[in-house]
Length: 288
Image: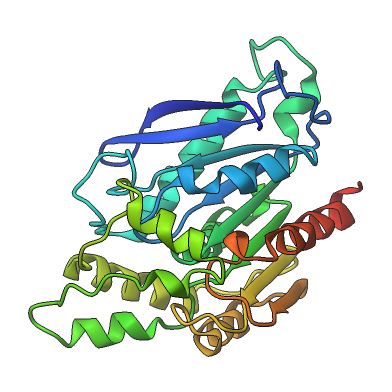
């Protein structure tokens, strides 16, 4: 297991709890770091669910940073209440700036100078894919690559449907839609840091506003991007994600759809194949 460190910083409207895997001092036999990964998690979950992903990435030369978004996991805020996704993107950028400033080789920090300038790969899953896409639109010059996993882009039918209802019903995510591995759903249901209640109306409205903003804010240009998704994704339908991808796709988009996989491809029965696809993509850009 990669070593990890939990820490906090001031976000746009409260404390954010972040985690870093694979510090330079003790990497548990992992190779020297070649790049930085920013992880953006999905709706209702938290960054602690990405231990396996982080371990895989660290073992292949990454330093990994992630944060519990506002109202998620251990971060401050009313549970799953997001008023403006621009603030969530800003928090993720603050995370990058803080880790850059504290990296060996940055001003006043001992260590190899190039560690403060490692290329950055952003990996966003589901709602985190929406956040990642908007981050790339705002700060794309700071990224070497973008990976979107089952991204909420274009439209999310569940949001449109729920906004028509008053009150919004308590309709928890069906755990069997996450993965073909039943243990994934069982762990999700038992996780006290996962939100198991209804959507908040303000969050639904912010999601729709965020999707509309992305759609009118231009494509990814020459930024290398990888879109991965399961063909049997019932939470964020493939057809919806594809419509959004087609709007923002630049000139360097790679697509990989995994047959039979459900929503959480990083937790699927073929997760090593999925993660191998991600690291092969990154290595193809940065060099193995």
